[in-house]
Image (tube, rainbow, N blue to C red):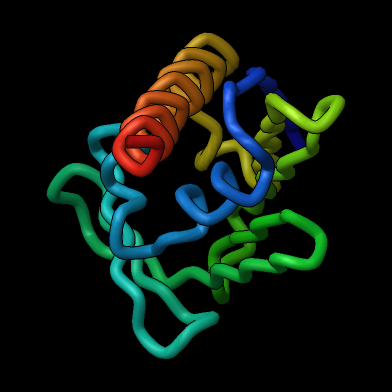
Length: 136
């Protein structure tokens, strides 16, 4: 098993960050560009990676814990979670963690860390748009 984890501070309350991250219909705006998530009957989702075959997955949003959890159905190839934590009543820290259980699913440290960093940056951009759009 190989595990990866990245964190980023975001200038918004945890509730705002969580709501943006948990919106299945808008996940393609912050996930790596090649990933698309389609909700079925939650927690069931289908993930498509850049025109490749679809993968059956599970997605759970636990608002009371400010936590998202996901993973593949059936083959047990990977799983992950995203945790939002408040920092002194203002900004939030978002941590995302991925676990690859089978070597063929793991694209490697450099690729995964780069994708996680870009995803967290894109999530922050989406959170800023949402918060700035409702501030006025």
